[in-house]
Length: 382
Image (cartoon, rainbow, N blue to C red; front, side):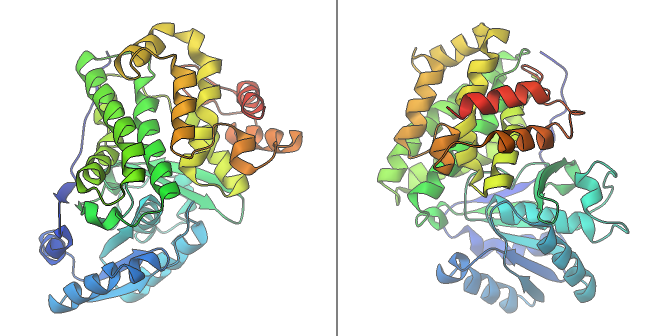
C-alpha cells in the first residue's frame, strides 16, 4: 500500500424530505446571497425548484438563478455565472441537479475571486487558492461530485474537455433525497450506475493495494451491480435508489482509493468521446472500459483475478462486464455508442487531444501515450 491523505469535509443530509433542511444548512455555512444553479426543466417540472424558492424566500435568504446547464457542462455558461455572481454580490452557490450542475457550480466558484480566466485552472496554468462555497441538492446519483474534489468542464469554443482537482471545491454540504431520483429515465439511471462503478474501478485497478480498501470497493461494486438492473425494473424502490445514491458519493470521495494509486485512464479516454460526439459520460465509459481492460490486463493478471473472484462470482471479468453493460442498456463499443464506426481521422483527433499533442500520458495501471490511446480506440471501434 501507499501512504495517503483522506479528506472528506462535506456534510451529508440524507433521506426523505431532506431538502426541508436547506435553510438550516445554508445558514450554518454563512450563505447571505445564493446563486441557485440548475439545468433544464426537469427540476422545475418535478416541483423541486419551486420548493427551493419557497424555502429560501420563507427563510429570508436572497437568491438569484442561473439555469441552462447541459451534460458535459460548458465553459461559456460558467463565465456567464461568474459575471452574474460578481454583479449580484453572490457569496454561496447552490447546485440543484447532478454532476454537470455541480461541476459548473464549482467552476463558477473558482472563477469569481480569480482575476484571470477560469479556464487557466483546467489548462494547468494556475492553481486555485480560494473559491466561493458550493452546496448541493442532488437529483442524479452518478458523478459523485457532491463529495469529490473534481470538476470537469468542456471548453465549447475549443472543443476541449478538461478536469481540475482541488480540495477547496469540495461542497460544504449535499442534501440527498432518494425520492428525487424516482423519475429518472432508465437510460440516465444506467449511465449513473456505470459512472459509479467506473469511479470505483479506476481506483481498484491499481498495482498497489490495501486489503480493507479493496474490501470496501468490492462491496460497493457488488451492491451497485446488484441494484442497478433491479432499480431500472422497479424505479420507485426507495431502498435501491438509496443504495445507488449513497454509493455514488462513496465511489468518488476518495474512500475506495485509500492506500492505492488510481488509474483514471478510461476516464481520460472517454472525455474525448463525449467531447467529440456529445454522448453521455457513463455511456462513453461503458463503450471503452472492456477494451482498456483487454489492453492492460497483462500488467497485473492477479488484479483481474481478484475482481473476478470477489465481485463477479468467478466469471471472466471482461466478458462479464460487457454482459452487464448490455443488461442495463449501455453500449460496449464505439459503434454501439455512436451508431457507426469512428473514422481514422476521428481516432487520430481523439488521441491527439487526449495526449495533448503527444506530450501527455494517462493512467497508472499501465501508462498510456498517444500510440496506446490510439490502439485502445481502435480496439473499441470493432
